[in-house]
Image (cartoon, rainbow, N blue to C red; front, side, top):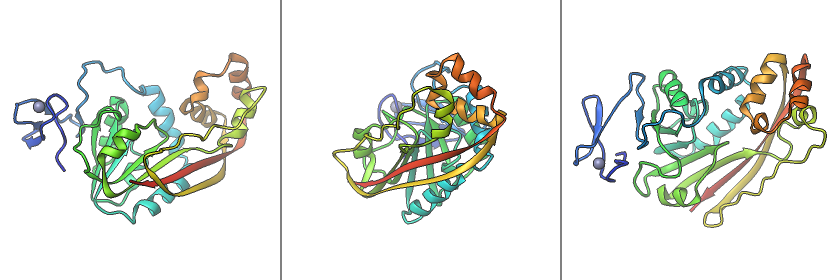
Length: 255
Ligand SMILES: [Zn+2]
């Protein structure tokens, strides 16, 4: 699959250690193997190093492995071009069975880590709201715990392609929230895609148990980190270990 020049929209082809379009816009591969197709010089987009380390440490505990295995099962039925939008450190991307895989994320930190650790995927720094790919290029698209543009999904998906969207279930990490907040509400699961047709909707969940430091790493990965007051954070710091339940809502769509 040809990627699209983010400047002029022409196809990019490989020339030595770069991707180049016919208008000579040139994008070099980084040492670790990724390419930056986000037309901005700022390097502060997306998750930082501390966040990345916390995520990696938590994911390495295997607490979310059941989700990865589930997605592998769903996506193994769809061969061809696979795109992971908001792929982060490539935890899910790396496990997918397709031969042609692309992972997109705005965070250079995440993409650098991903490309160093997973040679089976081409990792690209890009906006998932304006992807550097051509229309109807994808057989399978995954968005896992990331924002999503329905218009982009419509544009990039082949007519017989599938889109898998993973979001937190109503009671995802409920035990953690019980510690952090005085009043706890169920998560909203209302995001729907009206122009796509839903084939299947499923909720999967599993409990896991974490010790203090790892609990904090998990907390750093969640949006709660930004929304919790000092009192709640202190309550979490004081916990030696606890059992938490992960609950994922998985929706599978076609065009
Ligand atoms: Zn160009």
